[in-house]
Amino acid sequence: MGTHPLLKVENVKKYFPVGRAVFGRSKQYVKAVDDVSFTIDVGGSLGIVGESGSGKTTLAKVILRLLEPTSGKVYLDGVDLFSLNNKELRKLRPKMQMIFQDPMASLNPRRKIMHIIGQVFKTHTSIGDVEIRERVVDLLEKVGLTPPELFLDRYPHELSGGQRQRVCIARAIALNPKLLIADEPVSALDVSVRGQIVKLLLEIYEKHIDEIAYIVISHDIALIKSLCKDTLVMYLGRVVEKGEVRRIIEEPLHPYSQMLISSIPVPDPEIARNRKRIPIGGEIPSLINPPKGCYFHPRCPYVMDRCREKTPSLINVDDRLVSCYLYSE
Amino acid sequence: MTNMNRQRTAYAGIGPLKIVGLQLLYKTSKAFKVNPRFTAGFIILLVVVILAIVAPLITWYPPLKTLVGKPFTPPVALHPFGVDDLGRDIYTNVLYGIRTSLTVGVSSVIISLAIGILIGVVAGYYGGILEDALMRITDMALIIPQFLLALVIVAIFGQNFQNIIIAIGIVSWPGIARMMRAEFLSIKERPFIEAARAVGLTDVRIIFEEILPNAIPAIIPYAVLQINTAILVEAGLGFLGIADPNVPSLGLMLNTAQQYLVRAWWMAFFPGLVLSIIVIGLNLLGDGLIEYLNPRLRKR
Image 1: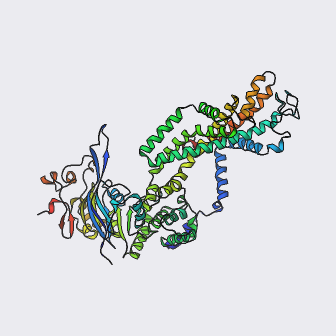
Image 2: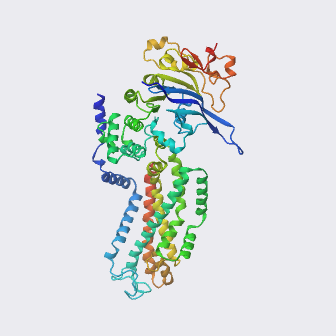
Image 3: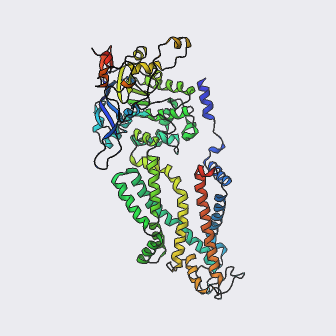
């Protein structure tokens, strides 16, 4: 397993302007992603966890340049993605793929499965129609849509939710991407098929472990645990904690992570009763006027004076990065 | 076990309806069942189109030939719709006139669709200054009265059949351009377009393979109603005497008829009746389509 960094994200920011003054630029911004940095090695897998509005999906879209960044740098395999022009970017697209949240909405309702997957080959390769068909059949088989011939001429609405997500996965892995981002890959699916899709994603990951890196975005840290080794915990566009998923679940350091972990339902009532529960108080603050200092301080049970003044930076505690004054000095 | 499940779900839904032709027939029959207006319009137009196609078989005089009967003969067995001032058989000319009307309607709408779709697509997809510029041009084109503009174009470039078609096509694109732009603006934001960009499709593919197939259904009923307008504009131009004299035209027949309205009512009655039937048919079909394609209206 090689361990050179495949993806390097440096100080990425994405601000959305809100409202517009009559003259000049608008003064207010929503800081959807604020100064996020991380790297992933080949064979690595990183989860991004946070509640809705924490900027997880925006971060993913900025990394893939589906949204233009406000500032920062992203290197994929050493190539600076933000410096590429549209044409160069398009050529690089097969290397980085995304599986979207809602499989129904992310498939063209008026195109057959054969066309949806086949057009990827038509755009990026010069192989003929017969070979494209063979490749599509192979892909459908690989993602468990068997017998594949039955699915080629179907429209997305004729498939079940799980089958649609399999089609999306097939499209994403069609050209052997190096970076695969799965944005809430199972949250739009029935609970009964979630397990199958998670299993499929793991199979694909294990099969390509020496060439691929995964990012999984979810609000569900249990899902991240089953798919990834490391995780970022995001809150209001900032990273509050980063480290191995298992360690974060066992012993969360940042107060926000602690609350997130304690809100995971536990199936065993015995354990659930004795577990220390830290309810998340309050509402997520407005992104347009975020609180000064640490964004989490209005909801934090351990709030100190300096939390209200200055944002804590990420510090290294036990092989983990945490942004909290509880652990400094 | 999961494998068995997969197999079962895979086969479900594969029925005789898979054959495209049958599916289309099924869909159309559903439209008939739920929508009497669509049905009525469809039947009227079907009859009109068949009449236009078989015109040479069911008429017994060449079109436009003068003195095939005594001028101003009222309707008789040999001349079911009567004879006009120059001795032309009105029945023959009405049937050929349907051909003219339909040809003008369909071809001018094809022209206006081509212009309108092109402008709407470019404005809606690329946005920015280009969109602003194109939409202001469209707005300006929209405020010029269509009929008058067509009149001027034909007057300048000459009264022949092609010029009339082109003129009507040129004056009716702005509505289509605006609709196309609106459709593109909304479809462009849907997740599957983002997915298409993420896969790295070219703009051309995104426009033609992804967005356009989703935008076309919205303008079909509009295009049908546009055919209607085009036919009326052609008839209107003919009524004012702006028509190709070498082509049978319902409008031109009405123009001649007005001088003899008291003496020979049949000269105005039959062309006018047929024109009305065509227009009513197209209107019903267009309205029915709008209703059928809009599920919210369908429920009522």
